[in-house]
Amino acid sequence: MTSVGESSNEGTSDLRSFSAQTLRRGGDAFRSLLQSETLGSIVLLLAVVVALVWANIAPAGYDGTWESVFGLRLRTHEVDHTLREWVNSGLMTVFFVVVGLEARREFDLGELRERSRLAMPVAVGILAMAIPVGIFIAANVSSGNAGAWGVAMSSDTALALGALSVLRGSNGDRLRIHLVTILVVDDLVSIIVVATVYSSSVSWVRVGIAVGVLAILVLAVRFGMRQLVPFVVLGFVAWAALFGSGIDPIAAGLAIGLAAPAFTPRRESLERATSTFRAFREEPTPELARTATAAVSDTQSMNARLQRIFVPWSAFLIVPLFALANAGVRLDGDSLRAAATSPIT
Image (tube, rainbow, N blue to C red; front, side):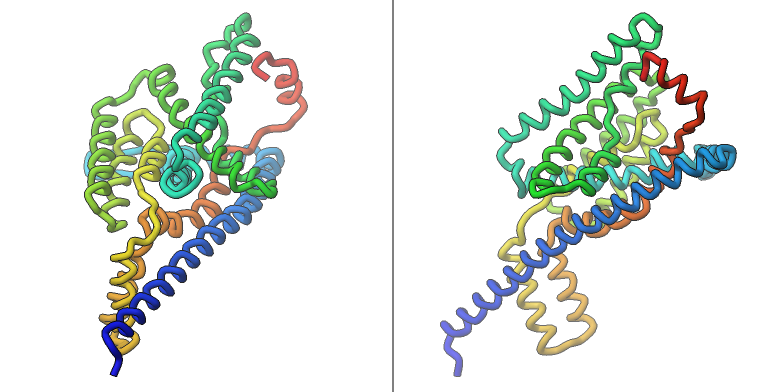
């Protein structure tokens, strides 16, 4: 007969084994996400090449495709935008959710747990906007174009991260962490500037609704909500409110990603998963299979589960579509001559 002490030791051993396997799988999953982003970056560069070729071989077809208008109607409400706008302000929100998730993961578990390490990337992010703005204003103060200084301050987050994924070296992961933080600062400040300086018809009522919904989302997570469906629904409502407000709704994507906490598996969750898995092993019924699956999923943070869902879609579909819709620059003689002599260039 097995003694109580032996049973306890066996349970502790099972728990440690399950915990180690869970952490190892989490690490493997994170590495696979990084690998998928590297492959996605290659797809992104191919999309840039296709956009350039398409825009220069068949400019009418390129412009006609992305300027096509698509609308959504709900009773008396109708929203009409071009295909390019649906990609830039709709689908790209998912990419900024991923950026927010990655930043939050580093705040909770990575190098940025020490808040003092935030000072450098935040300072670099501010300088990376201020210096180009200063150069732009100095070059255009006499041409009458200085008021467009906001164009010079914003980095292209998707292309920057894509280039880094392709060129990643031995310190690539650490550099990526700092770049993500810099780009989050860049995006947030750019959104504020566009809303306050360049937007004349902002619906502050809708902005208030979006902020209120995001506040509810943050509070719900803080008080223990771990289900993905209500989290995604609240995030969608916040995005929809911003989408019709006159402010770029990618701000909602960043906020949603930053709201999803990351943590290592809790002992209680591991114990529950271990016991349910043991019960399923002894009696493999469909009900116990569902219970065991849910228990194992519960050991993973909301941040990890959302990354597993969104990263492949972002890397392989959304970001390449964004490049295809926006990288089609004309490279004929007239445009190149105009660019070469322009103070904006």
